[in-house]
Length: 291
Image 1: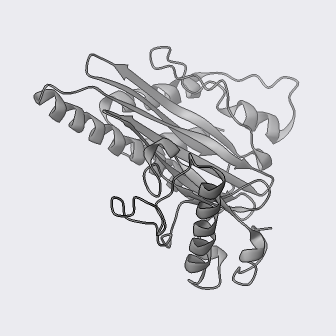
Image 2: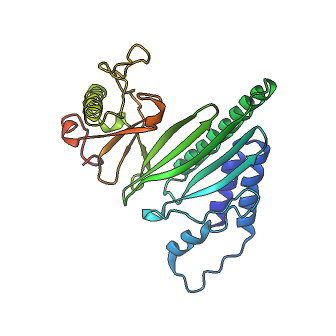
């Protein structure tokens, strides 16, 4: 247990975090390390794992409670290692940093958690720089909300989605995903699911078909594809990228995700397309993940 906490401490100390965020992380780890846990009638490693991070982030100033810790299969958990909030006359900030615990691969766990800390460090610094520039022009009125959600939680797979919503004159949301095989302790990438790059065209054609069908069935839905009326205004969608945002849902279906404004007007928000498995069967490496 102490080894896990020490590794976590080293992991976050290795990432240069702005002073405000760094204070929250270090305080959380110190408080947890000094807290005595009584296991009494609880038995086995499972009980110890459940209690391990029960006290992380107890600072009321930064709302750093983890009251809704999702407990995942194979004892893998996602916790909030820090939550930083700040509000003044020109900006409002809420940044929640996740950490994955209890993976059987400590190196992967450390790499992922360091990535999440580094992402939020850069996000915070970029936001503060932008606010400062707008303040010089007397126009600053921005907000930043960053957090995470567990999209898929099965005995085999965990998908962690991190979202960022920035609001100035209008709001814009972006999402990124990590899909982890909890048995093999690997991160699944989109190219790794397929025999070759042919998946790019196959998936893109499926998405265009779904876009057209949705627009035909619902006049309030608009996608920027070849037949859209505003193709002359926005670049029409032609193809997904090789490493397009994706996840695998609880039913074993491939879901392709686009950020706000990527393929549709902002009011459509983040849009997703479930790709029929029968359309992918001939190009999948296997049906180990996609059912």
